[in-house]
Image (cartoon, rainbow, N blue to C red; front, side, top):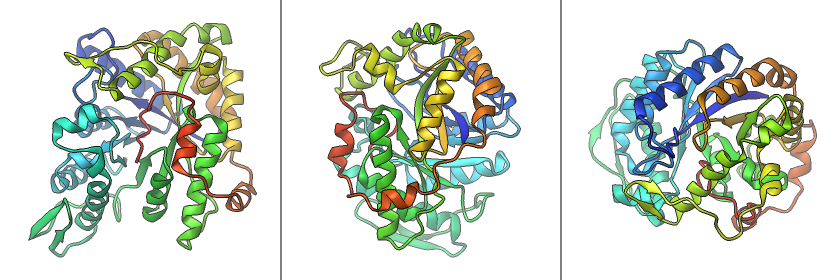
Length: 377
């Protein structure tokens, strides 16, 4: 099992952005010392839900302050970018951080953000698909190309330089909580990121969707990687970890408010919402607890097919010192205990025989939890 950190720099109290950002960088640097293998950087715009508007610039800054960590986007909202400019900037970034970049992509899920770039959710799927075609052409072809899609037009023969350092291009990860996202992951050989907010049954069904998609394409479905986005806090005791629940609750409610367009002067209007889980139910979806408790939770996730965990530790204004303690306990106790843990050998074959799920069934598994930064592609 591999572990990383996830960042979007939520800012409930509108703290100084540079101070907030540097705290995250210090946490990421410490995570490298403690045995984490990557960090993921979200893309968010125009609200204090997440102050992470320039993920590639932020990735470069972090890449220059780390030595070993892979630096991933979690995710680039592809439809709001000029795709040729994106191809160039990712290629430059991959070269400047010595081939440590992971290109996490998604089509986006927040109308508040996307509409301000002139993109609708209805158009985003096709624009995402066309953009992926162009990105791969730009990174793998030395010959000039053109492209004539519904949304993406490259009418003049174009060659993109430089190429990424990694060949044929940086690995793709895709975030999503739909069957369609699993189809895309299968088509492009991406590692999908699902969310712990689906609950155990939902995560397993999501993994089954990937297996079905690859099986339908005639591709191998053994030895696959599956990423899990988890809201994580490790403390000395379960009770101490549970005391941090209000911070996770703010993040959950902020995401729901953003999705409902409840944003005033760039501030999400946070409050309870209909159907939200009570504290006990919410805790079941979080990865909170003592090291022993969190080890058990991640071991259970591995039984569902999870091989990578993206740990969302900076959430809801949680204090820097508590996050650093959580990273330390992960590195000293949790990660070593799980480094050799893998999904069950027969799980893929078992899931290949189950009935395919629908996106509606996956969404229903959330029981009212907020859209997370696992984007509904």
